[in-house]
Amino acid sequence: MGTGESRGPGGWRWYGVERPPFADEPGPGEESVWDYPRPPRLEVDPRRVLVKIGETVIADTTRAVRILETASPPTFYLPRADVNTELLHAVGGQSYCEWKGSAAYWRVRTPEGEQVEQAAWSYPQPSHAFEMIRDHVSFYPGRVECFVDDERVRPQAGGFYGGWITDEVVGPFKGDPGAGGW
Image (cartoon, rainbow, N blue to C red; front, side, top):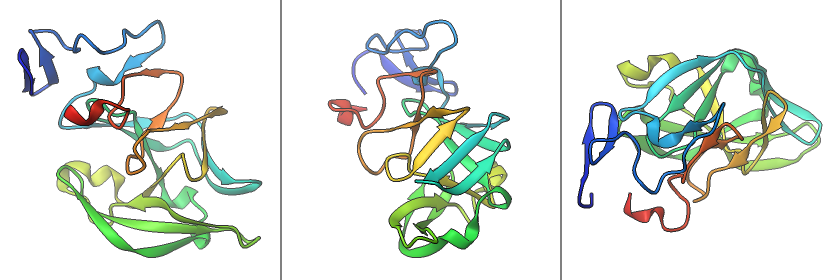
């Protein structure tokens, strides 16, 4: 952390303010990812979330859970009951999140034979605080098509990150060029 920065229970603090000076100022109807908390907050999102490859629908829900974490675009987790799980196939590898626990990864294979490696992930046994995302799956918007209320989601930079960028969020975002110091 640089001069004047600290982390408190509500997230980043820069000279006693919520948002660092380099953060974009949100306009009407927008959210700054720098106002999101650390540890992350979960919230139910009733908007229609659609995930597909071409014409093949992988998931369609109005029961998503958004995870909001300082400096990252929201990540949407969709209930497995609203995911065509016949298209998901487990792949090797895992990662660990200090908040959520160990993640498992999934490839998507369409009936037409199109295959996308590591298109999705889940937390089969999330930590107690993130129990809400048990039996949920999230998708990388840079690998499959993701939509929130008909808006095509843009992927978070950096390859590893799975944040969903829509017109309602402003950054800069973790993963953007020059973001390595945060």
